[in-house]
Image (cartoon, rainbow, N blue to C red; front, side, top):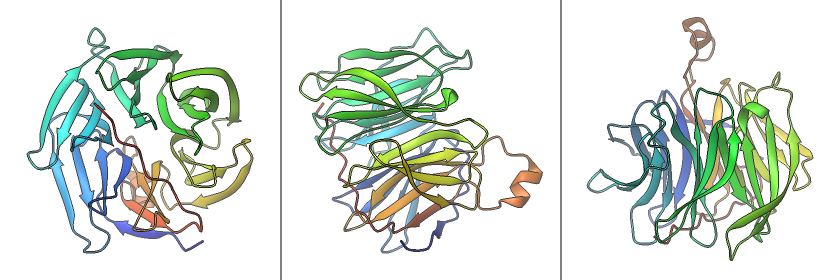
Length: 288
């Protein structure tokens, strides 16, 4: 494992959702409250920002080009060349206080994304199919967060943040159905809360611990295998990238930190990376 590198001083309010683009060899990620999408080239060190004018929380690759996205105004398509957001549908239009949070595309090309509200356990995980039909998959969630699948797509991993839990579900790839929920990891909350995640080629889960100053690698059975310390309290998500998918990129946030806390962690909101000694997997593309 290589040493953690401070890659970019982007000072994001809520850096989230890192996504490696295998054709461009570039990393994309969002700043939710900063209302922008960002792009970074690790070879040329070029950094670009796209101001989108609304909170976009997560993006995924799209088979037809561009990206599938979710945010404050529901599901949308986003195109980097024109920097245009095309809204598709909003299943929680009747909840003005709600917004989408994290999400990911499964290996059948469906886009899963969940919401968060200030009202407690009233959030929902949705599945957007290629025909743009929306399905409610998990209800009664606090903050819908990290999601991913085992390399064989037999298991789905899903974070309910304010329950401090990482769940595992049996996953039916063909039908897009989940069953047999069990608790894979239960944190206390005192050591931080689980946030975004990614799954490596060995089937282990890397989960950012918001408020915990670290990213933890868990086995498929939920055993903590290693902890990677970061110099900021709020790592938010992680994703593999690089030519060999051997670099783990970590987004972080400044959101909610006091002036005194920011003085102690001036790199909060920046982008970090390291080589963990294991490779990641390419993210699937949304087929709609």
